[in-house]
Length: 156
Image (cartoon, rainbow, N blue to C red):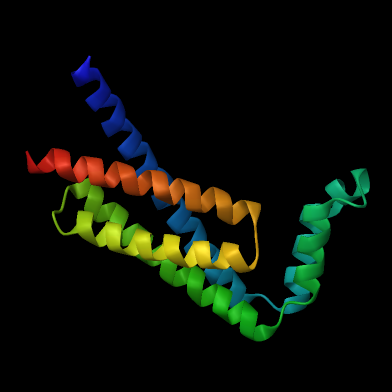
């Protein structure tokens, strides 16, 4: 029974790391796109993504706020978001590679960076609640727990 639980937790660790890797790739791509796109292009893209939802429910809270945000996006906010996504994504990709290789340095490094990201995300959530950020923070917390467990298992 214990052996089976260990296998399940190891598989969960692997899945969590794959999810973090894919998330890192998407963040890098999103960061690049934010640097390449103009504010009107971003607003049109967001309108395209939310068009059907707003046609169904013109008062949709999330879609309405995303459209409003995209129309008021400043260049400094756009650049900050681009830098944040690029940095966050590149760090995640590097850590995922290290974790999959079983590199000893990657476990504590991943824990430091993910914990720092979690604290920043909690700070952001305290200022501006966001369902998406709640979900990402929860996933990060689960991955941190799995990394700790995996690191302890590799020390044996």
